Length: 80
Image (cartoon, rainbow, N blue to C red; front, side):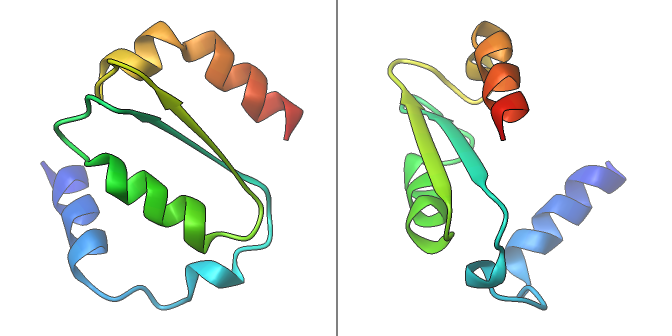
């Protein structure tokens, strides 16, 4: 429960830095059927980070995407 509460706090409290200051390459993976985190959250990161690649998978949700596309996600991470 502690990890979940920390995550919630991160989303409800101002961060001590601007996401625009992040300089490393960043991949955003999101399913358009995600009911846990809306697609608009991933789109916001995609618009506000400097060097971003956004991958949206149709008909995938919060838990199905990382399971079904684990290898693809890891390969993209290794390319970075």
